[in-house]
Length: 137
Image 1 (cartoon, rainbow, N blue to C red):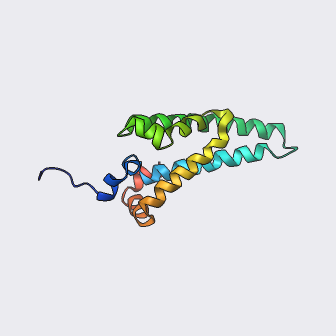
Image 2 (image 1 turned 60 degrees about the horizontal axis):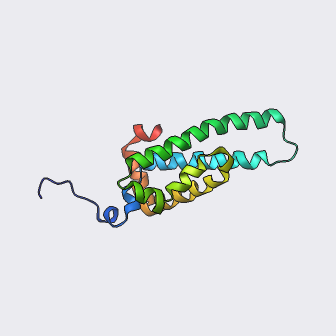
Image 3 (image 1 turned 30 degrees about the vertical axis):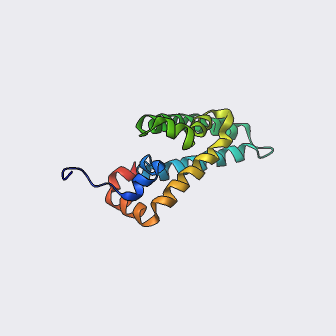
């Protein structure tokens, strides 16, 4: 049909690509995931001050809210909720939102990196440049 919006062939071939969010958002999730894993590693340092642990716990509380919101956002905006949850590691996103299972946030880093890698560095840079205002957030 002539009125249809053209669809990128690479996007239709892979259902996971259709569920990729804005590259700026994916980079944000990678950075938040790295922060969360670093916080987890810091808590394992022997002899660390109790006040520092308390600050890390407060930060992780807010990170948990971000991860749960991200899971819900991805679930409700997924083209196929079943595909997202079972095939695209949505179940791991949900489990990673649980504070006791923070180590599973490594899956989020891997998953976001994989999507960004498939999307391509040039595309990411051009999208970030094109949508600077949205990417800042």
